[in-house]
Length: 158
Image 1 (cartoon, rainbow, N blue to C red):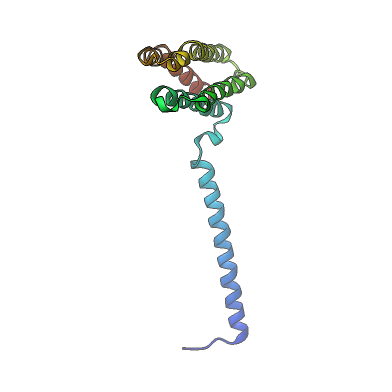
Image 2: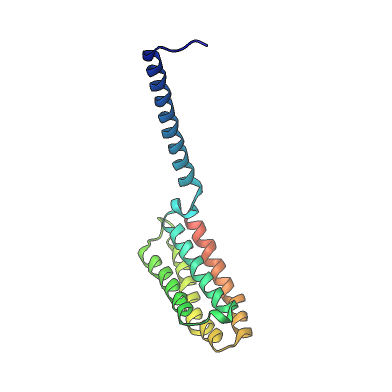
């Protein structure tokens, strides 16, 4: 095997180093691009993506309260209220997309009706041990309102 002279060896090492750095930078850029596209679906979804995420958090906190009797303490009750308030706060910051004011209004009305029933009927039924009544409310009108809100929000996000 032929040995490389000192100068040629340094040139080869430099070329290999440059190639390695280029590949590392390229791989990092590809990884960043892939993560930004595929990681969090709401990252590029704009205001409606944020709104939907908050709505799902509000729904999940309430379902936890409904389905887990051991998780009905002050901490979970606070989370139920805070997550619902976060949806309302996000909704107040938003404006209807141009030409879609009626849909936005309908979506907002569905949310506020959902929240009112949640606070005045559903949560009190859960906390007073009226499980069957709470499940009827949650699986009835609240399910319908949640679906309406979600569908309109998805439509407005297009």
